[in-house]
Length: 321
Ligand code: GLU
Image (tube, rainbow, N blue to C red; front, side, top):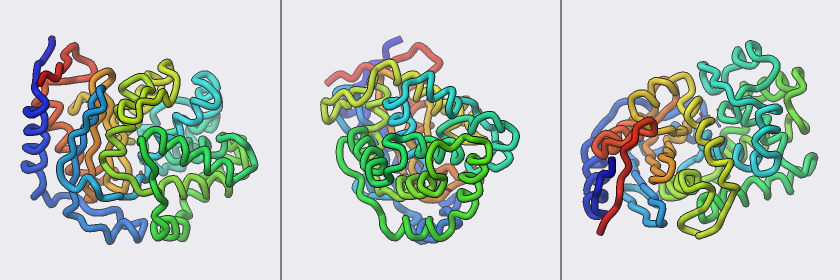
């Protein structure tokens, strides 16, 4: 069923979601990365990017926060661009782990592959795959150029976050070397881990994440920069990865209750993809126990519910003005 709504009404709805949840004080900033523990916990932003490139921004949408695990989506897209869908499935996989994002147990249980590029192990593996193998500078350039293409603009490194994360990423070091043990790392493990840590430390705004989400929703065509970033056939592949594991061990609960495939990061960002309709992003630092932003989840669920939209349902919104 078509659900007609004007752009003004949609803006009002996003404003209403922001008003509704801005006072919520549940959750806590990630504290295992010292930089993140000190971010202002009251920051709150919601952005929607429509298929025609129109962007709705409410709240602190100019604030650049640590992209963290949302960057796993971008680099999975780069690996798909470089290798294609079949090779990504073979080298990394597309299974949900049902376990926390940094689980070592998940690698031991699925020792034949890291399982998905959207958990730490698969994301480090994806960084190792990025071509040209062995050339850290050129790989980094490929990673940031791809992120900029998806976001429609550049995402500068937050040096302090990179330093903070590099000094404390002992668990991820273990993951990189365990993957090496299973021949599931395709370049030097330390080099791959450094690229992963650096990409997690890029600063991004909710608007940039909404544009990325809209590019995925729009078959790889960035509606703001008006560029085809990746092949349309890769869109359902990345959306399926986001659906199965975007909220880690809460992915099923999230999809069931929100109706939108979405990926979170411990910096407080969430990106949601509604194929053919829009990309949405929200940002607020306090997280629930699984590492997902409390207010971002509430806001996105509220908007999806009010619009009566669900990726598994037939309703669509038509924007009229
Ligand atoms: N850089 C973080 C880590 O590897 C990302 C985790 C996340 O955002 O879920 O621990």
